[in-house]
Length: 559
Image (cartoon, rainbow, N blue to C red):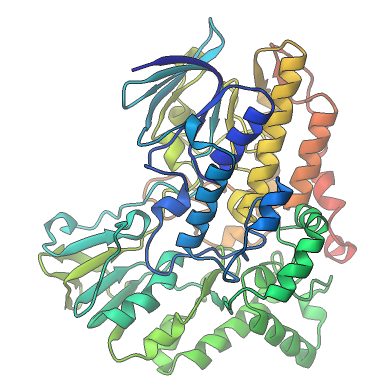
């Protein structure tokens, strides 16, 4: 047991925690990381299901803070697999000697703000305790598995696996009857591999997803060589982009409905051949705001589903129609649709035949029973707020963060919450986070927090907290952007819709990585209006909407 006095206690040793630790140490702060796993990696430690890989190109989904690091590391594929990303993060931990300041196999039990000492008192489940001036969470947006409430699940006599907590030794499904519940990203990545092993695979689908091809391939050495000659310029382009990804095919300011059909089809075929979600999520100016424009792109993808799936009835079940394309984070695949052309794969529509119960050796719907030996739960995560709400975090007056967020998260910049001084959430709810290239957003948050902590130290200040009005304004800004978009027409985990009883609140800043960075930088340059430093502060005078509008093309503003 210990009771350590430090400047910053960081929760999580994934992309966020590792960079935050490195940054603070370089600046002369004492920092320590608490990590539940037995090694670094965060999301990429836990999510080891077959086929797990990133949906952002490897050379973009990597750190930019160290030139030697990005020059020396070589990615083997366009979209790196989980083991390769984990090796990358392990390499980073070794290269910068980070493990000596990380406590592994340690979970935070509580973090309480002490108003007398102006410090966070943090206790772990191991019995250790810390007193830290700053409490910084890097727990990830998708780190708390959403266990489904299905009657009889506990009675299943076979093997049960969840994609978010996959056995490290792997699983061999050879000769087995397997059921996969869910058709989100983890199922789309894992089922092609499971289908090759299993004697029979039954996939239970509630809502079909729009899936575009990854078009994965080994790394193009020539391309990467040229990229590394000007990596700095490329990184600046990432930071100045909408999604934090700079290589977007045909990134031209066009309105979908203004493009002649032959030209539209030619362009979309090029995007399809290029593959990847970025080229479709940011494909046209009005695709995210005009339903007719969105439908034109959706129809193209729907036609591709019919082309790839031989049975028309199955293709129809796999075709999304109830929500606009890209209002859920698009999924990318390597052979997903083609598995439904196999004799050993069956698709069950849970809308027509909902699951009534799981029994000892089968999954029973209201129409029939499906005998299975192994059950895979691909039911997603309690996203954005789940992990934070599972920690006993208490701020001013002993208020629990979970209670404050009972009706949804309340933050300023998705970074801090009123009543919880000196607590920072890297890529927290209401920041760009999952609506962007996460690594770009992580680095931006870490740099902003580090600059602030230096400012506090240089000026002899102790306590930093957002103003009530600023938090209210930020929440209103999130709602304005949400209602300008097509997102209200979809039930997604962005809104918490996948977790029964969770409040339906939009949790992602969609004004763009570039706009968010610019307004955050303006706040810092002006001396942090909208925040209180040692109890004194001035109201926010940064126009959030202006930062979005000035980056919005004239054609879209006119529309």
